[in-house]
Image (cartoon, rainbow, N blue to C red; front, side, top):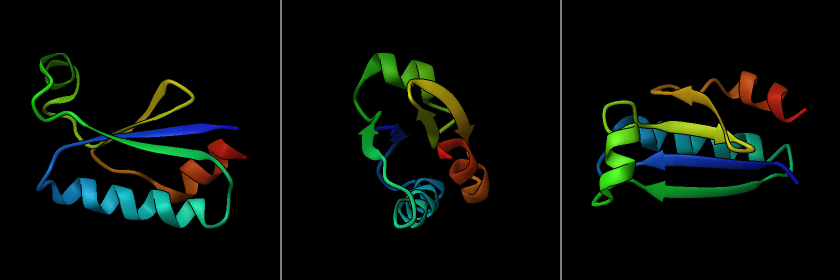
Length: 77
């Protein structure tokens, strides 16, 4: 099963939008979904701090700042 991870932070409006788009795609395609807060994790803050939301698909970064629902759905085939 494909795996989508959303790296986010609390209070991030763009993260809220990304989550909604991912959930909308998940209603049509089966995939595992996990959300990881970068808040308080130094390594994640360094990696994703200014770029959240960041979305990976099967471990590969595919989106940052904005998630294109149609592109995500196409990636998930």
